[in-house]
Length: 255
Length: 255
DNA sequence: AAAGACGTATCACAATGTGAGAGGAGAGAT
DNA sequence: ATCTCTCCTCTCACATTGTGATACGTCTTT
Image (cartoon, rainbow over all chains, first blue to last red; front, side, top):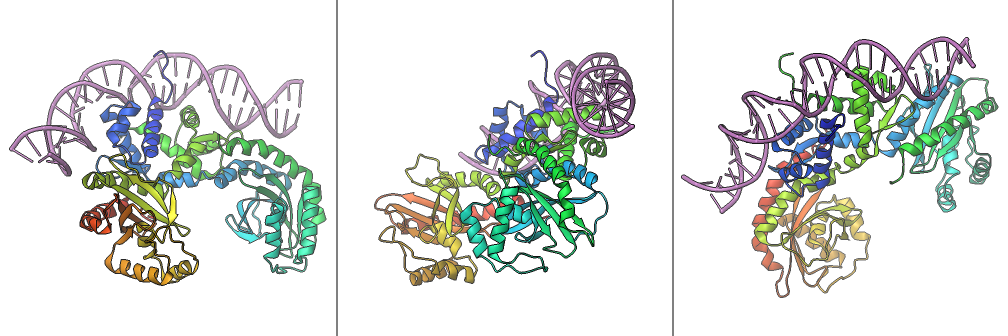
């Protein structure tokens, strides 16, 4: 063996961890460590270290099972979380350029969930990461709705009633349908103070797979209106363009 | 520093991995590695090793995000999977003692999912891990149904119709209700050839939190009947008793 | 009581991870 | 275009640190 790889010890540990977890309790630890090719003391030392960090736990004597930390980490590695992590730095840059707040959102049972909120300066928006909003009146929501299959969209439109949160809220299913058509055609959605009298948003689509994502730029200013946002459309689209390859690298559906 | 812990390198790697994943793209890698206290070359070497194994991936330049392997491992560390892993060796022992097939199951939208099937000898049962069966006619299913809150159970009973898979299947909601009451009182459920003419099962409850689990012992023999299984009830219960502390150690709801 | 498997210690050796320093590669700014 | 800053990699001498044969305590099974 001429050149031994760097971090051989880490690599062995990962192999062991994966082998144990994938075995799912079928074989005793000794058998697994043997298969991975580790002598007993080494294997037990690694297992002890992994256990200390909660990546492994003791099952029945002679057996190990996946630990809670692993579950935590895995949860944080869900498509939603990875998308958030991958996008955040780019969104921060866009926020810096536009001096506005950027939101990243997904559709979850007929509501928009904001999975990332990025702003450079302190903003006075009521939005928060993890918050859910009605889809039909927010820019991200309408953007995502416009991408739904027709049958699903019809079911949504029939599921009303839609309440008017402000004077501008489009609560009429017919008008909403027209608006979604326009959005699909133009490729951008606007929230013209439809959820809050002072809030104006402009949203574009990001990706569809493995999870539909959209992002929006938001201003909260008395006196401004939605038209003020349109100049930023190009920047938004360029940002989306930057994000797409990034996301597809991180979120490959299956190999 | 007198005694350095064993597997210090692994420990550092885990710290770095967790820090990166938990940061969720908020700060660049350099900042995170600095916080963890790792010099740049070391941090990058570790990151490269983690990336090679798919635990990390590259985001935007200067950023890392959780990788697909991490998601896989985390999925395998879900409550269901950990429960399976933790139980399997014990179930295997019971299977050896009784020379029967042991099943472990959960309730998932009104059906039983078999998450583990253990048998020492080759069996000729049609069951498979991951398979779903009607709850109202299987022993594990009835056991789990009997533990449902009253309101949920009523909804289930009203959700029929229940089909007779064999002559013995209890398809009448009233009789089924009576049977579930008995099961709740006695603490065991029987499948007396209610799903397959040759299959007899005896099930007991395991745990309720964080996920209701039940296990069953199954014989497939022409000429035998459910009464033949009752002598094994004590062994089943002892086995459940063994598993309970094990499971609570592995599946602590939240810390 | 004996046999066997799990898990931990001990310890000398050297393999291997370490980290300063230098340098290449990109991106952004001027 | 050049400059500049940050990201990332390479090299290399050092000694920290992981390694694994052997051996011992402990628990479970026969």
